[in-house]
Image 1 (cartoon, rainbow, N blue to C red):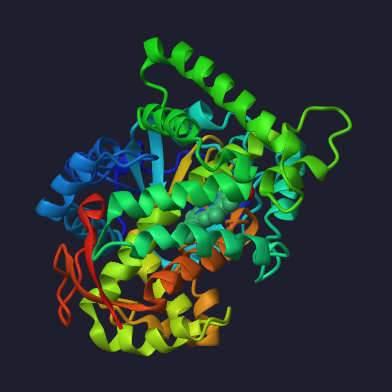
Image 2: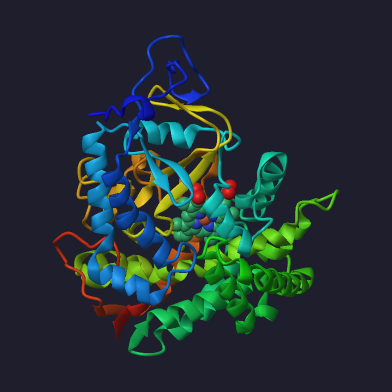
Length: 466
Ligand code: HEM
């Protein structure tokens, strides 16, 4: 049911859009807007917006993650979103976001519209998100718009070889993975901090070369910027210090990249042409380092899931031992771990023109949210939504399923998806090559519904030689 909100809630333009897409408006009756009432807004704020902010949008705060996991907080958010969908008949619902109107998309047709929209109309640099990301990547593609964004996207696409399942420098990257993963199996217990240390070394070597391997200080600087980004630009006093720190980190990255071997991502970025000097090729690497460091929780959660599902673990052990690159089952496990615990649980955009959603026009400047975690776990539409069922990713149609979007879809989809999958699968394989996971903390149910969040910083895995 769509909530009729009287004059304040109804579109007042006197027009009704005749289709989905940008700015189409017809002469007939206005379509009813689904606008959240005060109670719904408060509930959304309390169960979704504030907990997301408190947990940390960019650099999750370990204590808050632990608290969210203990309280099963994302379950409350899902209940809120389900209730909004039931009450408004699946229509996009206009709510109050942190700093203005926020249109929340709850049904498949709107997901289709969202992912097929042009990035010019449905832009990546939504205000709150942009205020956060600007702290750590002011000239990153994700913070850019217009022609400049397109040019920067091309640098990302080419350097990351976005269109290739196997990156042309995979051989060099996988050699780094094999070397660095040795530390992961050196002890009988593997914990999340060790996985993070190892992935951060891989990240520095893959982006900047071996000279950067030991530069923990650089990672600490980047991590401090990411923590500041969690505040979404709201801490004005800290902004200047963050700009100074960004400049220092950027200069350090540029020094490494200038002499890095040709296969590294930094060197690859520098081969792209920038005749007017405005693209900031090195500036693109800040997001890559964020994303590559972000593979550590992906690896930790995939291994945690495998520890809790011995039959799945048995199915992938053979692949891992085979020493090849083709590991479809293990790859599917990584994808499934990303569906269950997405790295980016909310996709946010901002409209740059009037857009029409389910017959209702919304003005330029409206923030639009796809709650990706909610859709990927949607019990009404996704079979075995709360179970670990990696086999679903082996079906050819899985990649096109818009509810399953660990990497997004369409024009703004992640250009590092193939590289991220290659590397995280390879790290898991290195751990499982000669070991099996004999137990893990936190304990996950082997058969029942899985929680929507786990205490990732607290993950501990028990390894046994096999
Ligand atoms: C498993 C790992 C990864 C996941 C789950 C992931 C997910 C995503 C998602 C969902 C987006 C879209 C964000 C949005 O719509 O707001 C995105 C964007 C992006 N990702 Fe990834 N990513 C991963 C790894 C990587 C890696 C390894 C790189 C590069 C080394 C990378 C580079 C990027 C870039 C540059 C964008 C911005 C694209 C644009 O604005 O056009 N990602 N990623």
